[in-house]
Image (cartoon, rainbow, N blue to C red; front, side, top):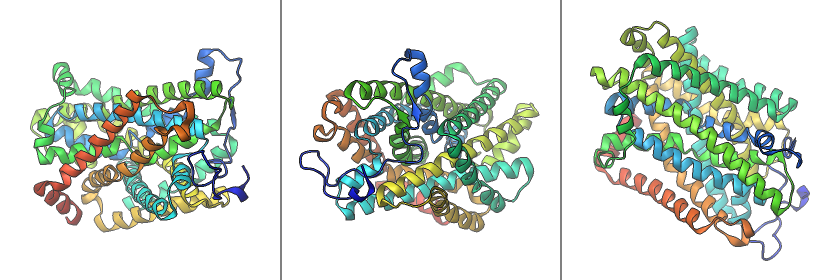
Length: 459
C-alpha cells in the first residue's frame, strides 16, 4: 500500500479506523525467501531467527540485576516466578507473531490504526518510557561489563554502547540474516558461560527443583514481591511485543490462508524454542546467585560488581568472575542491538515518520541513550543495582499498555478473520494480563512496598 494512503480511513468492515501504513521495517520487509518446496526442517530453519532476537530481551542485564538480587536474598524461591514469566512470554510472543503475519501490521501500527489519535499518542509515550527503562538496564549492563573487564569508566562505557547503531546499519545493509546470526552467536556465548558457572557453583538439585514450585510467600512478603515484579518486568518486556510483530514480516511466505497458517506455526516454534534458552539463562543466573551467595549467608549481593568480585574468591575458581563479565558484555550488547530495532519500529509505527534508516536509528537510539548517560552521571557505580532493578519494575508497570491491545486485536474476528485466537488461548491470554495487572496493583497498594519503591528512587 502506498504511503499516501497511510492514515486515511479504512474501508468499512475490516475492523480498523485507518488504512494500513507502509510495511514495518520497509528496508528488510519480506527480504528472506521461504520457498514452498522446502521440507519441514529446512523450512523451520528458514523461519528461525526472529524468536532469538526476541529472546535477547528476556536475558538482558536487567534480568541479571533482579535475578542476582532474588537469588542472594531468597535462595531458589523466585525460580517459580521466572518459570511463570517465561510461560507468559511464550504465549504473548505467539500472539505477536500471529498479529504480524495475519495483518501485516506490527503492534505499534495496529494501535495507531485502531485507536483515536490521543489514545495512540498516549500508548506511544508509555512505550517510549518502557524503552528508556529497558535501555537504561542494557547500556548500564554493558558499561559495567566494560568497566569490569577493561576498567573503562561507566559514562564512557554508556557512550560506547551507542556505537551499536553503526553495527545494526552495517548488518542490515548486508541482510537481516546477518543480524540474526550475530545475535544467536552472542546467545550461545552467554549460555556457554552460565553452563560453566552452574557447574562450578554446584547447586543442590533438589532445592533447585523445589524453587520452581509456586509459593504464596512471594505475594505476602513485600520485599520478595518487589523483586518478583522486577523479574516479571525483566522477562515479559513491552518492547519485545512490538519487535516480534514486526520482524516476523521479514520472511517472504505465501500471502494466502495456507501460507499464513504455516508461517504462524513455524514462527511460534521459533519463538518457543528461543525462549526456552532464555529460561535456562535466567534460571542459571538466579541459581548461581543462590548457590554461591545465599547458601553462604551473603544475602545482600545485588550489585553486579559485587557478584563479579565475590564469585572467584567464594567458589575458588579463578575464571568464574571473568566468564561472568564476558557473559554480561555479550548480554548487554545483544540487548542494545535489538533495542535499537524496537525503538525504530515503535517510532515509525505510532508516528508514521518516514526518515532515512540511519537517521531513524540515530534518533531512536538517542532517546534512550541520553537518559542513561544522565542517570549514570548522577548515580555512578554505587547506585547501578538499584537503578537496574527499578528499571525492570517500571517495565512491568508499562506492560499492561502493550499486552491488553495485543489481546484485543488478536481476539477480534473482524480483524483476524479465520485466524482469530481460539477460546482457550483467549482465556489464557486474559489470565496472563490479569496476573500482570493484579501484581502491579497489589504492589502499589502495599504501603511498605511503595515506601521501598520511593526509597530506591531517591536514595
